[in-house]
Structures are given as structure tokens and as C-alpha cells.
Image (tube, rainbow, N blue to C red):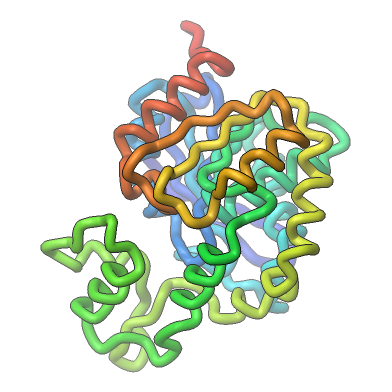
Amino acid sequence: METRRFSVPGGIHVVGDVGGNPAHPLIILQHGGGQTRHSWGTAMRDLVAAGYHVVNLDARGHGDSDWALDGDYSLESLSSDLRAVIATLGSTPALVGASMGGACSLYTVGHSQTPIASALILVDIVPNAGIEGVNKILGFMKARPEGFSNLEEVADAVAAYNPNRARPKDPRGLMKNLRVRNGRLYWHWDPAFMLNPRARDRDAHERVLLEATRHVKIPTLLVRGLKSDIVTDAGVAQFKQYLPALEIFDVGGAGHMVAGDKNDAFDEGVICFLQRHLPITPV
């Protein structure tokens, strides 16, 4: 594994972990809003162990990537960053994106004049996301602008948001998602991220993603957590109307954070899909 900085539009850099055999199919992982690349830690190791070449990115304004100088965290800017990263890698990747990362992947594939990806895996995200789940996420991200005084407070907040996941016995692992400022702990993302206008206009966001879906011509998998309040049956049905070839892999016992909730089941579904559509051939 190595950590790389990629130059992207706007005079900034995004950071990614890179691992695996560069001669094998390329997979790019993109996390959800308010997360970091560390949310894919186990999944990345498993994908590399399965033989894939993997790039695991921090989105602009998140984790170790630079904050946007102009505060632009629009879907278009995230997509431009992804295109810039792909341009440096020399092969056509499969895109795996959770939530925001999935929306970025879908938008990028659907708005490319030439093929930019070989396969698309969307993790608990559809164009018409459940309003209850969206509001819950936004509420969590907007809470505690004053930060936290210690890791126990952070662990309490995470446990309250996601009661399906066991509270960590040792909360020090949460530091991967935090930064320290003036003796207090804050989430490791730019607060300006929450000012994105489209994040407040769900109808416009849905229209843009549905229009992108019309132009998707590559194998596509939706990984859905069956306890998710983001991906509803109605959302899946609408998505399938626009993309009849969509494959669906349901993960029982998982909520919106599918890979973190049930990583073994998640890996099984994703790697099986990749092996069917992007098999690794001996070099």
C-alpha cells in the first residue's frame, strides 16, 4: 500500500491509498459524505487480496484531501476530481461508491461522452433517496458544530446514530475520522461541505441522477442494506425502470453504512460481481 496525492481542478489535491497489482483490473473506491477513505479499510484489503488494483480516495474536503478553496463541493466538482484521478491511472476502472461517492460515480458515468468506467457499484444509494434517511444523515452532520471534548463523546454520538453497530470498546480508532483544533475534536471534513445548494434541493439532485442513469451502459450493481432508510423499495423500483439491467445485492442486517455494518457479506457480493464482469487473468 502507498498513499498518493492527486492534483485535481481548483488548485487542490485529493489523497488516496493505492494497493494491488497495477496489471490487474482497477477499482476506485469513493466514500460517503462526512466519511473518509478509512471507511473502506477492510474492503480495500479484501479487494487487493482478491487480486485487484485498488485506489481508495478521500473526497475533496474530507480526510487528508485539501479543502476546496472556493467551498465548491457540488456533484460536478466531485466528478471533475474523479475524472482527473482516472486520467492519471492509465486504465478504465470499476467505480465503487457509497452514498455521495455512489452519486458521484453514477453522475460521472452518465455524463461521459466516451466510456470512463468498466463497471459501476453503488452502495446504498439510488437517485430517489428516502427523505427520512436523508434528514437523519443531515441532522447528524450538522450536530455538534462546537466539536467534542473527548473520544467517549464521539463514540456516544456514533452509537446513537447507528444503534445497529456495536459501540467500539476502544474508541481510539475513531481518530481516523477526526481532527484536533484548540484542544477539541471535530469531524475530519470541511463544514462548508454542508452549504452545497443541491444538497438542499432533493428534486434537482434526483433529476440529475436519473438523467445520468439513462446513459449508463456498463454492468451496474446496487448493494442495499436491508435496514437502510436511504434506499427504499420505491427508490429501487424507480431506478430499475431507468436501468432495467441493474443487478441488486441485498445485505441483511445492514443499514446505510453497509460495508461497515456487514463487511463480509458486502465483500462477497461485490467481489462476486467483479469476478463475473472483470475477471483477473494471469499475466
